[in-house]
Image 1 (cartoon, rainbow, N blue to C red):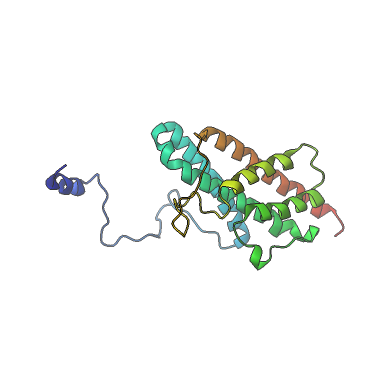
Image 2: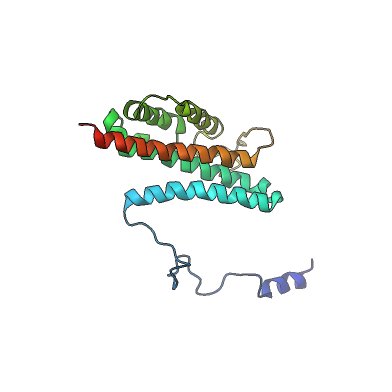
Length: 206
């Protein structure tokens, strides 16, 4: 492609190019196209949690529509699901942790999924009840899978560590649809745990 063709492509009205007056957060004139930020942090946490889970599923759907994109989208898919999982775990600790003497200290507000999960699991088992269905154990394996390949929420965002070393990821072909199916189940688990914990805490004479 020569220079003249490059310039012509930029002038093509179908090719969006930055324009004077562009702003990132522009007020919407239509309710159907607008999105509002929650003023309440409590509600916002739930929407962010759900939003990242939904974003992961939407990207998997895009891979099904355009299979070649899976090689690019596997990273944001896994990052979205990992962050959604982290938010789900922190929600359980933040909202119900006090009933099991578990609290998120300032030093705990990090991205270490495994240490966060151990606190979360304590809350779920002590306040929610025994793991009669084996779901807690199943979710623990998924948390471990994420933690093993992405201990600090960096592996799906960057290709290198801060010292320049390449970040190691599993040398296998990943089943994208399986990621969605497993994480849908994990998200359902946390939604169910939230409901069970809320019911138990409301009924108990704390």
